[in-house]
Image (spheres, rainbow, N blue to C red):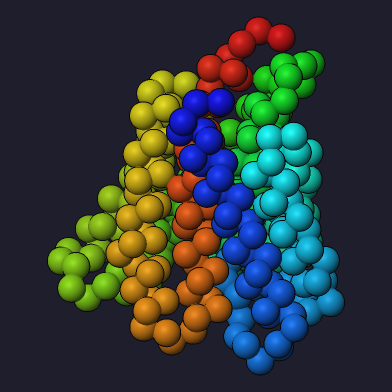
Amino acid sequence: MDTLTRIGRLVFAACMIGFGVLMVSRVSTPGSGALAGPWALVGLREGWFVAAALLLFGIGITLDRFVQPAALLLCALFVLVACMHYLPGIIARPRGGANWTRGFEALAIGGAALVLGVQSGPAGRFTKSGILLGQWLFAISLVVFAAQHVIYDELSANIIKPWMPWRILWVYVAAVGFVATALAILSNRMARLATVLLSVQFLLFVLLIHIPDVIAGANRMRDWTNVFIALSMSSGSLVLARSRPVAARPV
């Protein structure tokens, strides 16, 4: 495991633990505020199970011995959340942007977890197919994010801080970055460079948008969730940065 992958893995694990802590706070103190992203529709009773799973799998990913089972189970959790809470809404209301964003955030993070889990173990019969599936989940999610940025460009621009000039331009720059990275992953052309640059892009989201929101303190639970979502995507991008050579290996 190279340095980028190790950094990505540890930050990814920390984000899962962060999600778990937020979920514990949410379900133990119902008036503490709503969470964002994949956790927006998770109920209070279900939340205890989700919180325990996130904490357990997050800790497991930090331990060399348990990386693979923890990451694969984490992937299953995110896919289950997407299918239970957001796929029905996408089918029933295909123009509802929230279901697309939240559902594919879950699938993108789940895809990164799948790649991490598969490449953390010995090469086997399903190594290549598992990594390719994780890459596809991640890449398709990026295309959805790009489409959401374009469709809801004014709403996306309002998220950018007023002191930043040309806010609508940055929305389209982000969308182009998503599509370019998705194409690089799927075509296996400059995929490592693209995913590293995508990691930097998401890290900038954290520093320039989400951390200032946390400091402002309007909705701490939601804002902290957004911090961990962006960091999960940033660290997940680093996990994918090394994945293509493994996936291309004959089985």
